[in-house]
Amino acid sequence: MIGDLVIETKGLRKTFISKERGGKKEVEAVKGIDLTVRKGEIFGFLGPNGAGKSTTQKMLSTLLCPTGGEAKVLGYDLAEQQEQIRQNVGCVSQVGGADLSSTGVENLVLQAQLYGLDTLTAKKYAAEFVERLQMSSFIERPAQSYSGGQKRRLDIALGMIHHPQLLLLDEPTSGLDPQSRAYLWEEIKKLKAGGVTIFLTTQYMDEADKLCDTIAIIDNGKIIVTGTPGELKSSVGGDTIVFTFLSEETARKAETLLTEKIQVERIQTNNNSVYLNIKDGERMMPELLRSLDAKNLEAQTVTLSRPSLDDVFLKYTGRSLREDERK
Amino acid sequence: MKMKMLHDTKLMFIRNMQHTLRSPVFVFVSMFQPLMYLLLFMPLLNGLGSVSGLPAGKTVDVFIPGLLVLQALFGTAFVGFSLIDDIRTGVIERFLVTPVKRPAILLGRVLRDAIVLLLQCVLITLVAVPFGLNVNVDGFLLSLLLYALIGITMASISYGFALIYKIEDPLAPTLNTITLPLSLLSGIILPLALAPIWLQDLAKINPFSYTVNAARALFAGNFQNIGIAEGFVVISVLAILVFLWGLRSLKKMAS
Image (tube, rainbow over all chains, first blue to last red):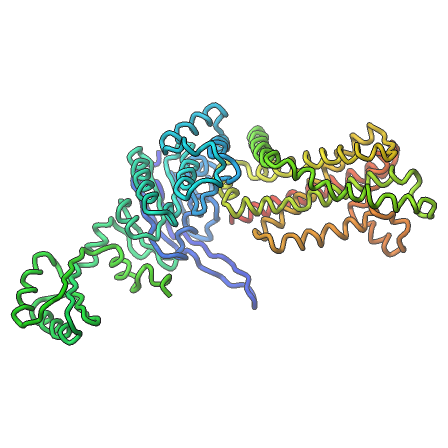
């Protein structure tokens, strides 16, 4: 019996040796992480490119040997019981891994057979997933002719074909159009409803926010914070209100006034806008506007936003999740 | 345990065979080189007929068994490219996260390559018959095993490097660097008897010289020739060693 914990890692670590000019260099991709994934949840592993998400996922799927620490997957020891882990875990990598010159059905049947199912059962399971993921219109064609969304559906079916208790999904919606993303999110929720535990790596805040029960933020090979999306967001503090004025001068005056008037967590002026971090923003807004009006500091626009996971990432890492890509 | 290996190898063999059968024309395209040797080069050898140092027997009878070794060398040396494609599209990783036996992934490929090679060898031999080829049928059938082992050896080398490089660019030069001296030093194109002593000595450390000698003896039906046993022993040991090396590269990919 595996109890409540589907994945449990302690100090899991991966150091790659890369050969470079002037000798070998050690690259610490994953610097000792502790994870607990509970049965039946969608666990989001969120972080920017190169944070160590895929490396962690590859260790959990037995593709990479950890260089340190220990882990149990479905109660099996990662170092000792790889066969059992492979048999009971489903895995969808970032590139997918469908055989492009074969048809979807051929891919699915072979995949099921590789898990030891006989031909008849393999065909039955394949048909089941074709139906479930609505793939019948294209599944008899070679996979190289599929659209991005269709191929992703096949990839997920390949990972699920043997009905694993745990599914590892590596960035399942990267590069997909919004419609396909929304469709996949629904499918992932359905899998969860069917009792499958899902470990999902993503670099998309909205994806983690919409899908996950628990989120661990990873940056630079280390887990920075773990919690439910709600917990993480409320840990950031209050809401953000942005007032925009006609000139920067007015904005500065407004900043001074607001700082005197109320207790703010953070206030900052940028060009014509004043960014205000405040608890209970909705309720405070009318009063703030009234006091600005009283001093003839007329705001042109006002926006109020709830804390997002972007703010969470910013708070814990000091940078925006997309910062690296903008450079 | 053994059953699973057999089961998985069968699955992988069928999968790879399906790939080959999807574009069967390539089975014939890769026979182009030996056929050209047969049509455009062998007549040159005929002209050499009386030069001392040529093995006894009709040119065609000596040339064809060597030509088949050449086909086994070059025809299977470049199969690694198909594996790079499978690595790039994530197919190999997908296989590796299933409980499939690791050796089966490679075995399924090299066995397919061996079967394709044997088909080519039979066809080339049939084409050579109108050129006056005399062949001992039992010897020929036994020589097919020899060619299969050469094919498995070359395919394993090719897959081993494909797994190490994971990209196409360095693969072709590496394989050419290996196959060219192996073929030149095996006395296929021209007999080594014509070579200076140092070249003959160099040829003695080339495992494929022994397979060429064995193939020629088999074609002639000289079953008591010690060269046959030597050829089989050398190529069997080599095939096993390079297959294990390729397997190590596969396992290393996941480490």
